[in-house]
Length: 517
Image 1 (cartoon, rainbow, N blue to C red):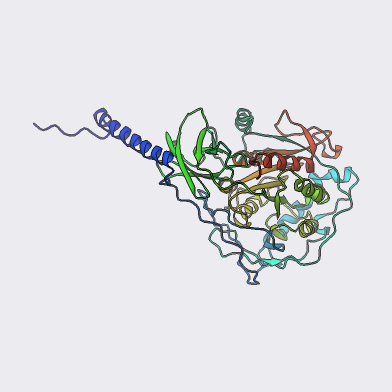
Image 2 (cartoon, rainbow, N blue to C red):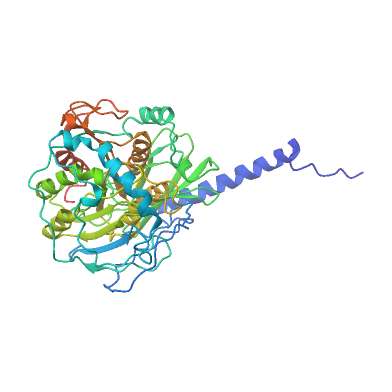
């Protein structure tokens, strides 16, 4: 009598499958180990294509941005610009439908709440003797000569035009701004405890398990800006680029919900490739050795200021205007003598004059100072702002330079992003930022609530940046002036002026570069 086959879920069937599964894993391990040993190109990593260069300036109008954008994983192109020696190129997305400029339903809804928010959140200016103007009485930014452009990933490129020559001067004085800083990757356990005790709405990504990747060449020298692909058997892939010290923090569960037991880690730089394995639970760092590459050249720094430009941010924007040149001069005098490109992305919200206003990279510090001086704090209605859309523009649309650049974003904001707009979401773009080698240094300005703190610290921790926060003599009263206290859930921090802290962050980042870089 012939015995029927065991059901798929029976112990007998599982016993048959286990040796086959183990054999498959061992075969894959042997194959990939051979790739690592011989430098053969890894199989399974489909590297992102280079980012297209900005189109020539045109005056073609673009449609009103839609909200029907959903993303479940980063879809990005690798940085590839070769230089930033170009005039300022400005791109703007309006905050209201240009087809209905006088009948936008959000205008009436936001007008009263905007004035009320200015009155409540920044009474500190009146307390400090600084005139506080109503939003509708503040001077408007210079007229935009740039057409609107959609945020959608598959949209046509935005129109790009030179900045209008008329610019406003910087304010004569700005109140001093002090700030502290924490590194959530250096004290990761405390960061996880902060996340557990702070229950607010946010875009969840699982970072509880993390692994350190270190890439060196055969001589033991760190390899910065190496492309990294961490791939699960399911095909889920985490993208990263090593920082100036040749390192990257990897969080596989942020993209792989199956919690695979083993991952292929493929690395490449300057045409040289290698691979190894990451095994769940391993305690040691993931070390990858690449063949020697070209000698490092002069350091290249791409530095973007991503700024909430609503009416409650006047103090912080004013301080940045008055200290930009000193920041740039100190960075230029660092031992690495970096070739620095500056970019600026300002954002407000729907119903305002602009949703975002983006100025692509330039090495013309005078022109960059001009666009920063022209930026006015204005508008804003409900508490959240259009941070999602602005971060997406920063990560995907600016002309980030290719292999060998150090890429940094200083995000200055006092409110969380709108999580209800249905467009780009910050968690997708922070994943894409790591894939492009962009570190986010989030600066929490006065008035930032717990939700805003969670979001800002998420972006900084995942990309390898830091969380910076403004401090005051009395944490509960920003009008008390600069000091050491903060309302944020942090400890063990030192305090400096914000401009000195920015210089410190750049200095520490570039100091990791190999000698000669």
